[in-house]
Image (cartoon, rainbow, N blue to C red; front, side, top):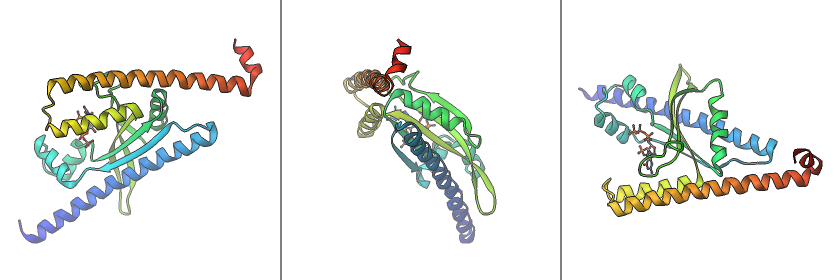
Length: 221
Ligand code: 0O2
């Protein structure tokens, strides 16, 4: 391989990664629109915060090697589906489905994969709803469909996951059994907190309805 060829490959890779950055921009805009619209029409904000990350070129290439995928851009596009990642942190469990449904229902979004680690919690206690979607990105010379991994979870699930992530890295994946069982217990507590908060949330909602419209509440009872 000569120097010129390496230069071309590098440019192609930089351009390839740029598509993922644009896909993150598109999804983030969609989520911000949902957030603002919810706020305006329901006076309610189901989204606490949104984070996004673009996988570094090193970790994309590391994953391709680790998983033995062919080393070309088409194969990377097809196989490495978490290059673009967006995490939506919601206040309550019911917000997760509300956000999911409103994203999945948009006609330019195609769901490639969905993993519900809330209905089916991972053995270590991890909970989150994972969607892999693809979205068109309109570039100056062409349109590309780019996959984006969207993780939707509550604040409690996010709190748990960020601590577990730190512990996992600290022990390089070999978490001692006592810590593992403490983490599983903490996940259970997080679920209980989520359920309690959800119940409280509904209670507050009902009280607010009675206050603003006492006649309606009489009809309901
Ligand atoms: P980062 O730094 O967040 O990107 P694969 O991605 O193919 O290796 P798989 O099984 O296809 O794995 O994906 P999965 O498990 O549906 O989701 C992968 C991502 O979800 C992870 O990305 C984490 O962000 C999150 N995740 C999954 N399981 C756990 C877990 O047990 N604990 C925590 N804290 N996060 C988890 P990365 O690439 O690992 O990390």
